[in-house]
Image 1 (cartoon, rainbow, N blue to C red):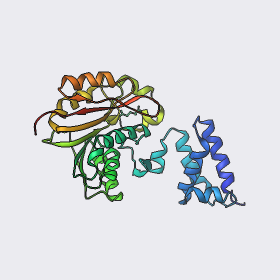
Image 2 (cartoon, rainbow, N blue to C red):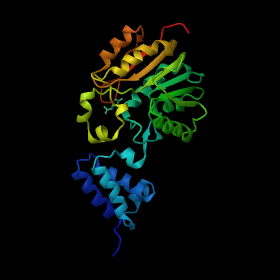
Image 3 (cartoon, rainbow, N blue to C red):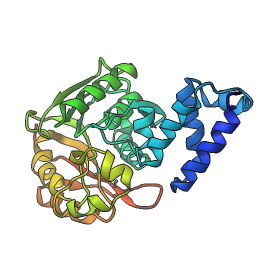
Image 4 (cartoon, helix red, strand yellow):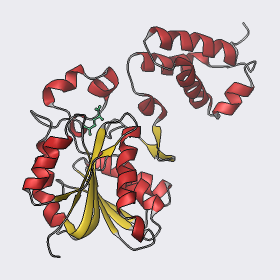
Length: 286
Ligand code: GLN
């Protein structure tokens, strides 16, 4: 029997992804086939007639996708801030929304791009926030903390792969409890989904992403209460924190941070117009 061609495999797979309700089945199909064959997408697009010896292995990946496994878990990677991050079930899948945090953080230190500023990422997951910021600030150095040792290992590996291993250090810990403070910039994408809403999120998120990275407690704000308690110590006077917030949470988080004595900046909005990042400033003496 002649083996199916690239075009045959793409057609079969795209139909299955479409039937499973996947938004952009053609694009995902190409990514999955390129991954299965160990080639880039251009090779897929340029050679539709090429025979595929093991279409079954590819269709197995497609099957995982139709069952709700996130693309980033199947491919083992995700692009964020034009950098490639390894992603595993122990880490939150970096989202485009979080690029708002990187932009806001960079804007806050725009006058000091070449300075040796210190950066802290709390709840780092893949390390995407810290590493994106360090990639833009050549003399900055940073520390990232995550409560999951498995996530810390992934983040450290990402730093090394991106050539940032000398400027980024990682450890497992409970928010900033092991740290004295004095940071110029603090970043975080904390868990902020109200506990009762997790089960209703898409399968990809509810069943495949780490619960620790999503669960914000009863009202979704538990992590911000922790951060409100720690940021005044962690930020040096004049330092800035850029913290992601969930949809509709900016006001409530602002109230918590204000009550903790932090000075607030304007909200930063994501591409959908949602207030996605809260900026605050430290005022305590070093
Ligand atoms: N953005 C994720 C979601 O809504 C949640 C991530 C988080 O809790 N930080 O699915």
